[in-house]
Image 1 (cartoon, helix red, strand yellow):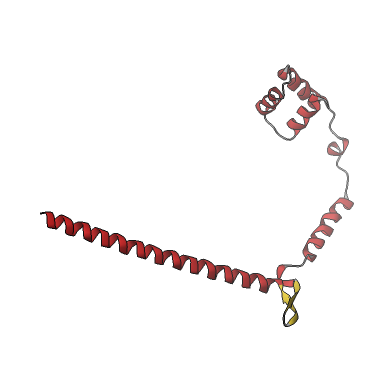
Image 2 (cartoon, rainbow, N blue to C red; image 1 turned 45 degrees about the vertical axis):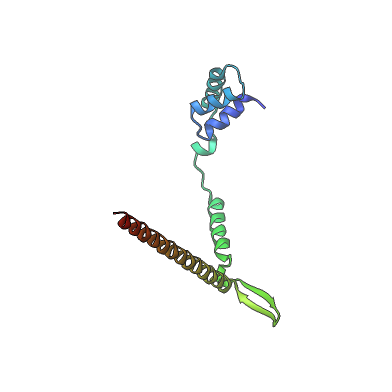
Length: 144
């Protein structure tokens, strides 16, 4: 592949001159400045596409985005999706939204119980620290 083609693509994508030159030198390209200038001059000498200079009516291009918007709105939301759950009681249709709510509730309960356990252990540590401080104070009073 031609190095100038790669440089032209990098310029078109918006890479800075310094980034391009650094990349070229990292790859071991000789004459980095010449390669960059050549690619830049080729880009500047390219004629502009005819479509850009002469606007033409394009009714067909405006209708596909509308169709795409319609298809994207037809996608089911989470509340519309039902899943068949097989349990020991048999099959049961459940909405995905209900499953997600239940899992979120379980996760919140788990987080709450974890937080409660951490608070209890902190409380125990604080009690031990207080007891140790009292012992130290008593020893200091006894020495006086």
